[in-house]
Image (cartoon, rainbow, N blue to C red; front, side):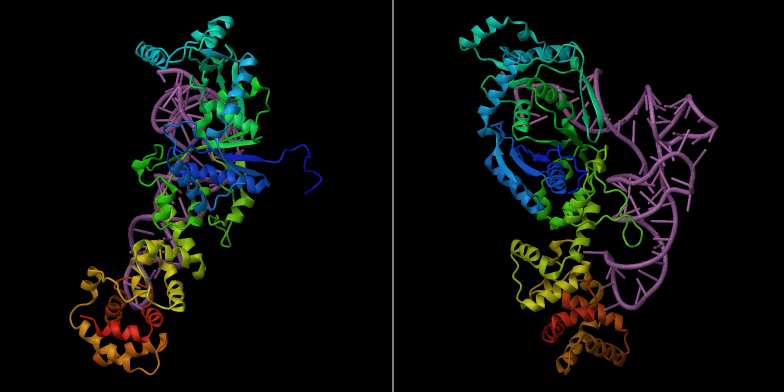
Amino acid sequence: MSDSTPSFKKPVRVRFAPSPTGYLHVGGARTALFNCLFARHTGGTMILRIEDTDFERSSEEMVEGILEGMRWLGLSWDEGPFYQSKRLALYKATAQKIIDAGHAYPCFCTKEELEARRAEATAAGRPPMYDRRCRRIAKEDAAKRVAAGEAAAIRFAVPEGGSTSFDDAVFGKVEFANAEIEDFVLLRSDGIPTYHLSVVADDIDMRLTHILRGADHISNTPKQVLQYRALGAELPVFAHVPLILGPDKTRLSKRHGATSVIAYKQMGIVPEAFRNFLALLGWTPGNIKDENGKDREIFSSDELVKLFSLDGISKSNAVFDNDKLAWFNTEYIRAYPADALRPLIEDEWKQADFKPTRRDAEIAQAIELLKPRARNLKDFATAFKAYFADEFETDPAAAAKFLTGDVPAMLRELGARYAAAAEFTEASAEAVLRGFAEEKGVKAGGLINGARVALTGQGVAPSLFAVMAALGQERVVKRLSAVS
RNA sequence: GGCGCUAUCGUCUAGGGGUUAGGACGUGAGAUUCUCAAUCUUAAAACACGGGUUCGAUUCCCGUUAGCGCUACCA
């Protein structure tokens, strides 16, 4: 740590605060990632907070789903998870503080009344904002009604004039006229806080220094700033992250396909690939060149942590591009050491109810051979089955293309040659086949293509002789002899 | 509707008062020949529009348009 580091700078504290009303979706995952990267980059603290004050829609099952998604992506936190549902006393106390400071008041309007008025206003073409009528009730009268047990929500008294602004680390200065800000509800009539209150109460209580969240919260921010002021609390740095869109440029949702992070795990995506892809959606490390002078896009988690900074966050929304994700996935599968890839592949096998029958070393060798052309972890449990067990399906299209005419008969004969061969290596296997082809007066290519289908069940595979070496003499003989 | 935000190839983006506007994904073409979903080479592809400011704007300012967000006793 250098002397120039200002000693007054507070250590960074950030949080990810999902609402457990659904699984961890890609937008939330990216927000969590950015928070995590920022915390690690600055040596700060990452807090996980579950915003479950909407009891109707929240569930413990969803919490588990969110944690599972975070774990899969390698997103860690230092404190929590804290549950807002267990911190209700704090919110009530905070609301009371705001009331005591003269910035909030009880509202006796019922939900039905409000809805009716809103509908009326909309129909009349007026903005459907709360008309602040309960704010005009004399304090003593209001106190009496509350004491008498009348149900009341607590609303924040937004200043009548002027404006509220904040400096966003991504968007710069953002300003809202106070006249546009509704007297929002802090505490519902049942005593449960709304989001507006609980975030602020917690963000202050947890001593957060930076609020990194989706840009959909920009319009909520002035309401929160107003509360910080009413409470006499110091403002954190707000950094809003642009949204992730579907291919049609509307907000990413179920109708665009998978939106839950775990769905990508199930689709055979490697977690590091997903994380790398996500990190580069709406953020850029700037001009980092690779050895060819091209912009680098593949970054390890450590590099991401090292490079991450708030000013690399872009202001415009980003479209989620599945093709690019698929590319990251192939790059990562290729770069993975075979033994690191192994557990992920075994997971796929388990899910596909597939049992490899070959020895460990053989499996490792096959993975090594296959990974440069795998696009997805699923490939290992589908197209690549023939490398790991003796039961596999043959692609009918490949068979129809390459196992034609007298090729099958020749392959059976070739099988016999291999059976009689004294040695069996990649080079010797090739020599045998080419010699056989010459002897028969046919092109080697035809036999090679046919043998590929016979040995792997696929029309596409690595170099045939490498495949043969990986499979071993016995299997090659067996499979070639069985061609029909 | 009101308020807020945004605007570089189809997509993710770099760049920035003077550039052949760079890269990646995807797409097209070619090469390789033992298949291709691999590899290599290569091509097409962008500064939304209109006004300013300026010797000069894609870059700065304003407006228009478009998109997105918010507009609940949801979060």
